[in-house]
Amino acid sequence: MKPKPHSIRFKFFSVISLVALVFIGLLLVLNLFFYKDYFMMTRKNSLRDAFNTVCASYTGDTDDIVTMLDSYESRSAIRLAVVMDDGTILTSSFLHDRDESGVPGFNFGMNEQQFRSIAVLASVMQNADWSSLAVHQYRFTNVCLRDNDQYLCLIGSLDTDEGSYLIAYMPFAFIEQNSSLNLAFLLIAGGCALLICLVLAFFFSREFTRPLVSMAALADRMSELDFSSQYVGKGKRESDEIEQLGQSLNRLSAYLEQAIGELKQSNDQLAQEVREKERIDNMRREFIVNVSHELKTPIALIQGYAEGLTAGVADDPEDRKFYCDTIADEAGHMNRLVMQLLSLSKLELGAEQTFFEEIDLYEMCHDAVQKTAVLCESKGLSVDCENTHVTVRTDSGLLDQVLMNYLSNAIRYTTEGGKIVISASRDEKNARLTVFNEGEGLPEEELPKIWEKFYRTDRARTREAGGTGIGLSLVRAIADTLHGDCGAENVPGGIAFWFTLPNELSQN
Image 1 (cartoon, rainbow, N blue to C red):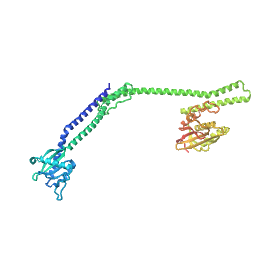
Image 2: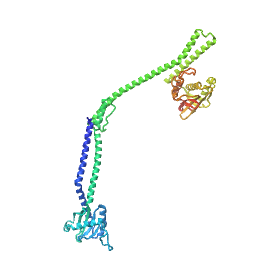
Image 3: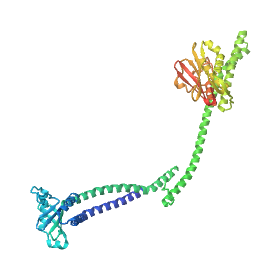
Image 4: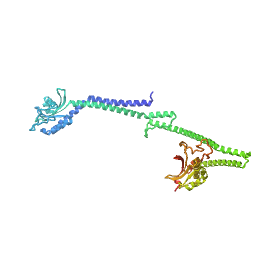
């Protein structure tokens, strides 16, 4: 079975369509049975008006009304002629030829239409009741020629003293043609009107039943525990029972929606907390694994060499010195790792205090090159820092950590005899420090990953290259603390690491 709103809509549509169909049918019946009589009445009125107008303008001289007769024929298809009771045609709208003396006459080169007009005039005058015209002034008559052409005619007296009469007529063909055209047009217009009525009935029926359909859909959603939909009524202050029912459903839906929304919000918050806890647990496990991996080697070496010293394995002073130096190096590596972890934790927690001051990047870069001169000389590296004459306002200690991390990585991964270039620049928004080193660069997919804790491009985590694996993570944390940014990009001939500081914190 169809839903009830659709049934109401169908009934409403059917009633409107039936009313429109009856109305259009009534127009067709009226046109079919009464239009011809009405049209004949209007045509008789037209002939009567033409007769009255000519009568008012006729003074006995036919020259005064020639133009008027022509105008009526061209404008209303009414043919007019002034005749005498003996059959003489004084003037007409279809015979205008005159002789040289100016007296009206007949044109013996007449066409068929003019012959028909003469025949109509002859028939009217032959059947005219001249005595009645003296009393009634004019009368109507119908003329039928041999070829069944019919004419509606009016004959009236213009001047009873002179015996002049006006004959006005029009063919029935015009009447029949107008009736046929009117019927055809009415059929077309009726069809169009019916179509429009059907379309309007469809829209009106849909508009009338829309509140019920909307409330039914709202109830269905509420039965499925979906309370997000609302009934939208007419928005008028004065509402009927349907609008009141819709508003009641809205209030019920709003109450339930609020309760479900609060419960859903609590569930989402709980799920978010669970996901955050899982993320923290994963980070904790990953951190423990990475720190354990970094510490197990130096601890094993320290333990092994310490046991060797305790067991007296290294009796030779040089052996003992080697053992002690190894223990000291590994302890230093562990100390650097712990200190970097502490610094990284402070920066991530926002506990690191910053002291902003004016810094000459050239002096800082020059000092960093001096500190690492021994490492550069051992690999035959050249370091250029001449293009760093830029002054910035920032925390010198944190920026020095960034520079030393970049420079240490450059020294570590630059091939022997290679070149390192430190440069600085400033644009409209930022001051930029860049450290370039010659080499093969890094795969593009690994560039975003090198800033993660303990991430190394060396998957085997070999210790020959040195480092702790958190240096670039520390740079990222410093960038966040100083409201700057950092990154790396492959350039022709090597790789460039950059660090930016906003201009509002720095000046030339």
